[in-house]
Image (cartoon, rainbow, N blue to C red; front, side, top):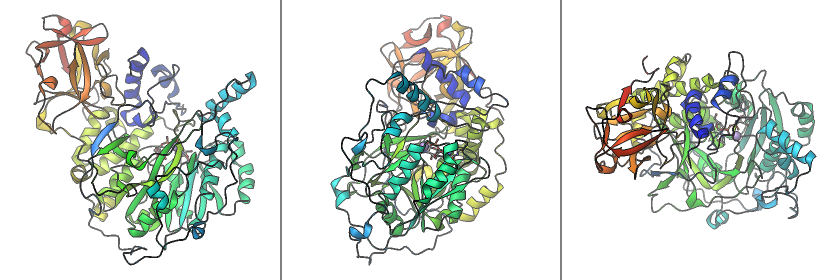
Length: 622
Ligand code: UD2
Ligand code: MN
């Protein structure tokens, strides 16, 4: 990815939004979404937050994280308080469902290949008329996806059965629990909402699907009121609950869960499409052990064309987190050699929207933090809670559900980004022990945001006898490196004397991409892209999203994956901070210099543009 002025703007903007927000950012920022827009949008009384969303599944998202698969993740049995419910399946359960026993609630109309979007294909209008272009534009504005195309595709479209053969061949053991599918929404488009509902009804076995509960989080769009009410009457297993006021997705899910009657809760976003055979694998894992929380593979539904593919088992990625508490995906290397392609894969975190969990285990484990508002943070909270308190979190490679990843939130965010930071602060304060400092260092402004009363959640952790965050790091996500305090010589931003100390070293790297050039940007004191660590080992580390180390390539200074602590610090990543305030690269003997708005490696000189001064981050003091 080349650096543009835009992406630099984004780099500061991102920090202002709160590092917490990186899940919702995109590589390509539309021009209008600049920092200024953001400031204009999040005023005192303005709750309209039109932020760019990061599309984590962007096909050109080439900077994959790679993590190690820890050994023997299953049944780690953290947590003192044990969930005693007997599993529905045990090693003596040898009876299998027949195909006809697993007939879906509704049968799917036969697809006609000439219909737009059938078999998961994308649909594009080659030469839209003026009127069509206008409709397309309006659709994007209203829903942040191509609603016009979405409307053209049948709500019953067939995705084809593209699962791996091992998955197709699987038989499912009897008996499996029933599930309630809970879909919360706020101002969702008709086409996506209805396609989500039909895809559930047309792929979920009747014997397993207890009900579909739509929780309308106080939508204002007219079609979602009476018209929807009338429409779902014909689908007798579907009901609608309305929240009394806008409560946010977390509380809306809690309301849905309260009203549900199935053995297992299955949550979906309101713009999903379930593929053939998605439900049985999730329920079987839970039937074998009710402390498993199981996610499908989340497939990308393209927000422009609505194309949707199916990931093969070996390419399934797992969920991780960064110190700024954002969610990300990673490839797992060194998977256990005996792991079959239809075995569930343990995942350090979940994306949050799509998962199944035993209803009683959901409540045993403290459901959700109902003090979290609107959007964000709840997925990391739940992931940590599951692992630290005795459960397991996994992804089943045979279960595939599509999701439309939008590049910005199409709805208002009451309270602005502070609400998301507040949610994340609640995660950090309750679950991260001394490691919460890692979060605060990345998101210094979080210290100023009141997290609210945490007594109940801390009590819950106590009552469940959950393990420490250090335990989680060691056993579940060993690749998340926290530099020990003693190794940190200086942390903060670095100003350049040649630029009157107004400009700082800046990674312009809100996504933690590998190989980007280090730049200069006006110092903002808020950490994020300008937060660097000088370590005792001589590295200049940067971690906003993931651990990166400064390493030159020719005259450029790049952010690369750190070698330490997996290996020794290589000379290429070793720097010396001299008494003349220079960053001297040990391997080449050259120094970092500010040249215009870039940072280059040049022969050392006494020039002010080679003098770097350390400054603490503005909000880093309590
Ligand atoms: C992801 C999750 C989402 C949730 C979120 C963090 C996936 C695929 N999606 O963001 O489920 O965990 O991260 O919080 O894992 N909604 C309401 N009320 C609101 C706001 C949203 O009901 O105030 C609904 C919304 O209509 C949608 C669902 O909540 O059906 C999730 O929201 P999203 O689709 O904007 O979140 P997403 O996919 O960006
Ligand atoms: Mn979503």
